[in-house]
Length: 98
Image (cartoon, rainbow, N blue to C red):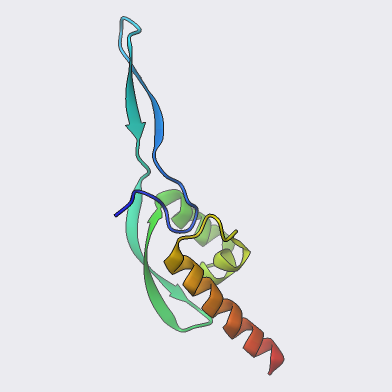
């Protein structure tokens, strides 16, 4: 399982540990990921996604999974999130047509 947020694409970053004597050694900064069940209002389903805590706060701020995922760029989304995005867009198009 990769250490990458399924909604924002945030992954590990590289930096240095810096000692008191200013010796620098390589280290990795891993994202804070959680497995969360998110509810889609338009589909009436819950989806289990592995997202960062920052993405979870952003979802609350934007107004839910549907609003966030429709506006998100496809390059940043995982395959599972892209599948959800297609379903949500189809459902919203169906509701506006009716």
